[in-house]
Length: 147
Image 1 (cartoon, rainbow, N blue to C red):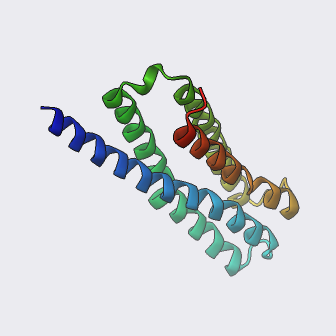
Image 2: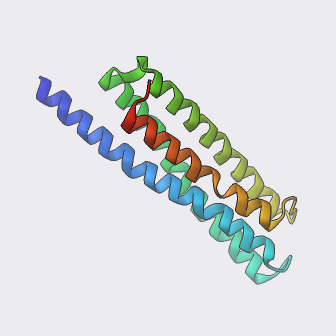
């Protein structure tokens, strides 16, 4: 029975890491897409292409990956019993922040598609660093388990 649990844990962990990579890669790409979108002429064919690219990235990669990260991560926490660990609580808090940022990015994309451009390209470039910082902190929490 223990070997079945070990095998299940390994598959859950592999799936979790794979979809974390997809999600974070998309979270790096989407703000960059928004920068290029904002630099295109309003109403142009180029702007229409950016709207389409952004929607595909969100619907095909980013959102499904985020959902799978949550499902597999929660299954990992349950399977391993780590849900009582302090490092996991901190990790989940950071993943909640990333999920909120994900939601904000989707909302910003909707504004762009309507022709609104509330942020500068520079602000979007700075915001592009948030997933990287969160990823660094999460990896440290998972590997080092400082508490």
